[in-house]
Length: 497
View 1 (tube, one colour):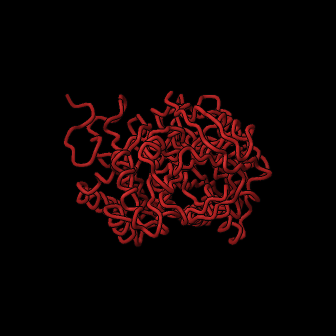
View 2 (view 1 turned 180 degrees about the vertical axis):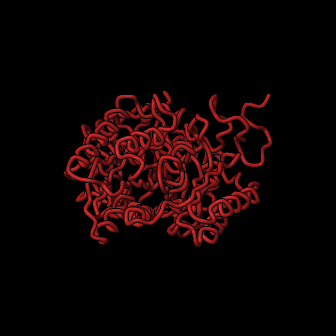
View 3 (view 1 turned 90 degrees about the vertical axis):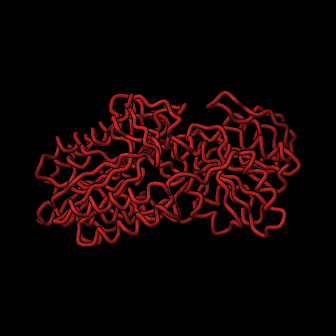
């Protein structure tokens, strides 16, 4: 059995300040850079990406793998025309070469599911269309998805099974790739294609309410598990509520003999919990004040999430609102990660460890830097290996880094490339042990919980300025589908007079 394997992953924020170009796929933060066919299998096989799980299952089954290309870029603005065409062109060229070498029994793709490009609002739908055109209708195609996928009817129609992760924080990425590969092996082995149905949900859910560790999403996912028994797959995607196109939002795809009934039952479970999907975010000033109050008597860190500048949701990781508030309130024992500012990191390295330095820190994405004078406490090259539940074993390369003390009680990790602070190693690489701090501030919305919640006395979610707005209803959407509601529990519909 001979199977093609490749990946093209991006989560696109229509309103983010920075576009995603070709170069960004070579600056992937906590994931490998773009992999060509000759390095793909060896690079991805051991690490925490869906394709790694797919490779493991395929090789255990004795399948021969024909690698294509694989790439990931940190969430940001839409993928540029150049980047989309170059990457999809490379993938299709390798696919054509694989077909020249012999017949293919199937194709597995590692996709995110929420990519928007300059030319294609449903970029994964377009990529699947091109792949299907090359391999024909007879060859089965399966794909793994991030549950933040804006899964569309076109994506479902052009593939044979889509398998999203079950968790947020995403600690089952390899599992999803493995399951997508198991389904592909069944189809390639001659099992008939499953009946499939697609359902969309009529309201958007904020990122901070999509966490599967807590209600209401924990209950929805438990219902999904039970309803999916007996099906090949019951795919539920939470949606990425920052993509301005008609396919934005929650969606369900069911595969199997009882697909229609299972999809409708899951739709009802989501609707029954709608009112629980709002809330839980504090203004930054309030969050810092509460963290200081709690830290006075806590024996473990108080963790603050800077949700609206989350690099995992399209933020650039360089807004300074939360940092400014920590300084203004003299938050003792506080450390923030990560501040994405290559110019400031370079200046720290030029000044040297122990030097006092004045900087215009951050603010490249929003034009609002913060003037600070601080001491360079430690320098690093930004290369380390992740150890948390999401990315254990994955390489990180954040370029030149510095630990900068910007007040008597506040320190900040300054880096040269953005990465969501979901792993404690972003602090440890510069000698900071998160569990020993009074207040730990992270630029993240939910992923941080996998590695930081176990060490926290309390977790606070703060809304400081940034593009990953806690309430997407405030965004200037123009191209959503008519009738979609922009927040749970709100009867106002997009496009209504």
